[in-house]
Length: 258
Length: 310
Image (tube, rainbow over all chains, first blue to last red):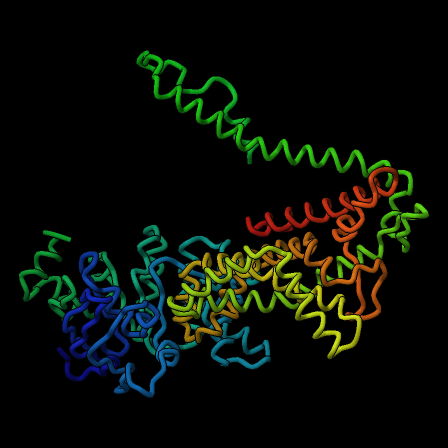
């Protein structure tokens, strides 16, 4: 389903994913629009995490995972023969369910992506600037600017999650995937991340998996509803929540199951 | 740990106390109590043995150290038991050098092998290599010494110069013997690194090698170091293979091709010729030095494995 007049960032066609003999996704086709927040909702085990992990080829590192179908990023097949997973992941960043900073300083956590991608020369001035910018974009700079060299583990869980966002922003990807980023956070920390998502979409394309329908309604422009590995319905968030076309979607968003 | 078990089970066991509703003595709890005591007793056996060993070597060795003087004993350059001159410095240097040199060989090899096993090897290869490495740990040290004498010593004599029995030969043999420990403990440490670190690194566009080098190995560092320390303990403590290939001359070597004698070799070689008197005491005193060195290494290793700061 596509909406004319919008720029498409990622186009997914007939995606099937298998873990060994189990089929986790069945024939999913979906368009991700540029500079929009796309939410993926559905009950546990519906394949929504599997789905976003195909968008940056994170499923490649799971033994036995097999991906069929076509996914293009700006028209380029990300599973194509001449495309490396490393390059895809540099362009499509990811923030995980559980905050996972490295056991390094706050500074080094953000610098990591820049260093390994060779995006920084040895001039520490420009490195510092880019780190400040990434932390500022993740709404964390003011809280950590005086202790950049302390361990990332000394931050609260909510701050750690924003650090992970800063780390993803630092290498300036085109798309950022969020895999239930707030499931371990309290309401205040969650609100901060949701504010952040709304700010970030002017520069980035965002796909967020969430088990919270309220969160999807608050932050997203478009919503896809997944059930048992199939995408049941995809459309404007306002329509999915007010006028769902499919009975199963209606049952889910009105809280009849899930 | 054993002590903690003893202390916490002090006082009457809770299952003998009447419950709030006046529960009566339960027969199955008595069995629990007996089994618990048996386990504590079993654990105590090793404590008793260690205590006995410590008392024996210290009681025999300490008087000699007192007589010779700790400084002269540790830093004396000459070992002439016939003249009652007991200086173990050349042998301390010998032990130190052979340990350092063997670690220089086995640490890079061991850590790379562990990385390969934990991160790179497909299951088929891993399932072949793991038992082989465990087998390597089970081979008696005399066999390593034998192979050293038959293969390594003549090789060094022919290609590097006589006598062949040398610091180099010993270092290579001890390096091979320390490898299984270093590989096994390092591999455990690498496998214990949370998968989420690896995912985070991959998601930032890192290659597998970049992830290993910058995230996984640094995160596993303390565990790997624990393996290295235990491996050096193995090299320090090894006796049979050391005697067979090191040449056993108690002098400070000028090159890696010179023969040396280690502390363990000193004790093993001369015990039979020292039935009593100061000579025998001096060998026990050598044992004290070894005991202290190994204890320090074990403490360091345990602390590293628990991730504490030194």
